[in-house]
Picture 1 (cartoon, helix red, strand yellow):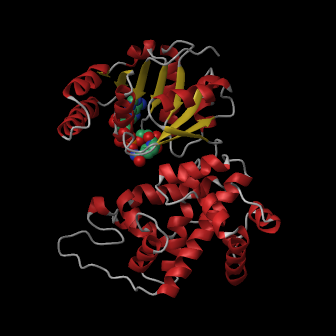
Picture 2 (cartoon, helix red, strand yellow; picture 1 turned 60 degrees about the vertical axis):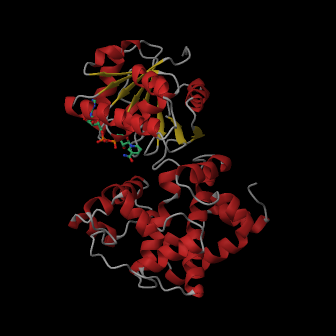
Picture 3 (cartoon, protein in one colour; picture 1 turned 30 degrees about the vertical axis):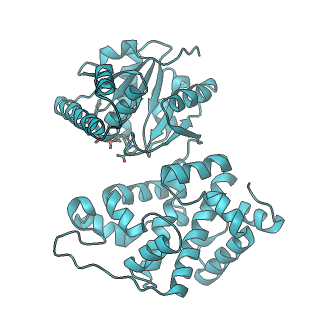
Amino acid sequence: MEMSPIQITGIAGSGAMGSGIAQVAATAGQQVLIFDTNGEALQRAEKNLVATLNKLTEKGKITTEQQQAILGRIQFVADLNQFAKCDLVIEAIVEKLEIKQNLFKQLEAVVTEKCVLATNTSSLSIASIAGACKHPERVLGIHFFNPAPLMPLVEIIPGIATAPALRAFCKSTIEGWGKTTVQVKDTPGFIVNRVARPFYSESLRIYDEGIASKATIDWALKEKGGFRMGPFELMDMIGHDVNYVVTETVWTQLYFDPRFKPSLTQKRLLEAGFLGRKSGKGFYNYGTDAAEELPEKNETLATYIVDRVLCMLMNEAVDAVYLKVASPEDIDLAMTKGVNYPKGLLKWGDEKGWKQIMHSMTELHNWYEEERYRCSPLLKTMAISGKTFF
Ligand SMILES: NC(=O)c1ccc[n+]([C@@H]2O[C@H](COP(=O)([O-])OP(=O)(O)OC[C@H]3O[C@@H](n4cnc5c(N)ncnc54)[C@H](O)[C@@H]3O)[C@@H](O)[C@H]2O)c1
């Protein structure tokens, strides 16, 4: 397929992601058209964008001229036919397969044959969206993180039918917008939402077993593990409606692999409407009268918690290499840039020694006799051969 440099980008969906991506593209000099079927959402997006750019100007991050130029490059449109002139369309509408498929069909009737069509989906396969298109070779995933203007990582996901030349083309386009890209196979959770699962789920398991309190697990992973936030505070911040659903979706799509099994404790929070910070209550209470929960600062317990969560995370990262989800370089880049891990999990494992990680996994497997704790075949190979990734 013939491709020319992207000058006009269409964004479908003016919610949190669509408006963030529009800001990124317009800041990078793109002409941007942003479309939404909901007129109120479109108006809200415009108001929010002006407010965000005002703040950036007040803080001195951009000049008044730059602010005006950025706003001048964004057009809010209520008619999809205006996308006829776009070179690239990024879809960021509601996460429902049928609705996305319909939009892609509509888009194909509007845009030129050179226009690249991308989806920002977090949990649907690129194949399932492209499968509804007449020209699936021009469809791929371009997955931004929330908030798009602040998060540096973008996962580029070619589908089974995507034209090979699109990978490099989209990589250079999105890097030209100031982002760091990684390339990922069209698999559930892509890199970040797959490899990060044990950070939440193994912490929940330790908590469910009564080994340590939430506050102790959060403290251990921050203080001894070097993570910016503990898993329970982070789940509360993300919201259980999002975090639990991602876990359940990845687990379901990986044919109920026990390594990804969700926790009933988190499901109950979701069912009760305890969504985290946004609802004032999640694992912690965010009311004004909330008492602070204190951790048990026990070194031996902290070491146990960090070792257990880390060996599960590293095993997952190694398994993603084993199953060709992405390259070792891209997996480490994704976890440091996409979720701010203190180190890439593979580099970290190289330093700790894969033999020790296999030993920790094997101990868990022997004790619990659960598939959840099985070693990735590549972890065994790394441990036995003494090789490192970097
Ligand atoms: N929120 C996140 O953290 C996040 C992160 C990465 C990716 N994503 C993905 O990005 C997409 C959008 O997520 P969001 O959080 O911005 O959602 P959102 O609910 O904030 O916004 C979705 C917008 O799409 C509009 N819409 C619905 N159907 C439409 C249609 N047929 N045509 C045009 N507009 C339509 C809605 O009116 C709404 O304004 C989803 O696929 C989601 O999985 C979300």
